[in-house]
Length: 510
Image (cartoon, rainbow, N blue to C red):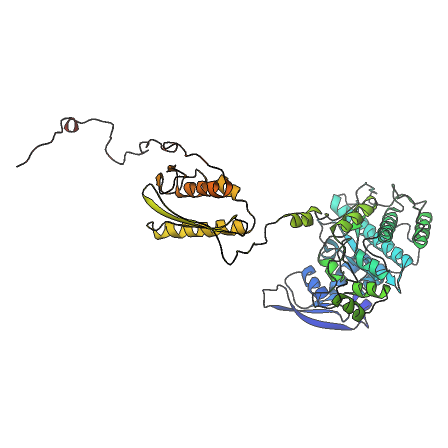
């Protein structure tokens, strides 16, 4: 393939990586030596499951040659070089890569490109012109693919030498999604949770939308950006260049969701989300962390010294900052990933459960021996320092081993719930007047005279002892139901009277 020539002179390395972490089958992957192992793993996920060794140059040639084989757009200047070489270089520098649909040439998916914003920061400055040229190349490539594949999707093939009819519907022909925003802000010396960072995100999102809609029937409006004059200057130049063109198809823009292509580009945070950790999974400082420390005038050693003293030189952005950034760029994006629920962190702080309250070394409580319907029950309680119920033990000594085991497990479950903050009122409401096992007259405790079950007596006794609420007995016949005749005649009909039964008398036998 011609795309192989784009990779001549690039230093490569070959890795043996498993497709699945639980599988022992290894696959050979050849990627540039500057790429990480995570990028090589993402390349495996993007390629077909079956096959031999994987080479990045060969896999990229599939979609690069596909774009080069399509005809140029009508407004393209003469002498324009093939797009494949530039697309290969952008992939090599991990600045832009096709999405999964374009990489796999999926006819049912929408093709697009994912752009890593941090890759366009050079010496602390954002390369606006290079970024705009990259977006324009991506837009032209998507429109060329759509123009070449549209007749095959619609089924309206040209007859003989007649040109195919032109179709200009309002539907988008592709996606351009931005990623790694927080790492880009770190390289520029901006904080994610700051007005300056949100202004830059709005400016770069607006510029992306303006380039994607330039030359369409509904172009984006020019904007005024006093804080970033180079972005405003680039936007004016693009608007002026395509002011007379109105026949191009629209392209949607936005921010990416976590996926394999983001891992292929080695992003630190997918889309517009903040970087949640200052270190990598291997325990080293991230590039964004080093950039932020450098802009603060701190070395890693100085930051470590401040951390040991109890001071934190860097503070990762939270859910509130993520929501503010999401709201800031929303007017300039057609696609945004789902925003995490900001209430989750608040609920975790409000909930008292999950932290088990330790039992005191010396515990108070009481022991009670009772009989319910002739079945003995031993109940023992333990208390916290404040006198509230901490643990419960129910032991029916003369029941079957299965019944004793179930009662012991139930007691332990209730004890764990009480120690983790579950109110006793909830247990009382749930198990009082319940029907389980033995029932009948209660002997040995004046708190109840009749119980529908051992659990009914136990929790009504706990309510009286720890909640100060005396609960009356349930009616003795509240759960007694007349035994209904069986559905099938398993035995003799009991309703028929026989003469033998009617004349049956006692006889004295000597």
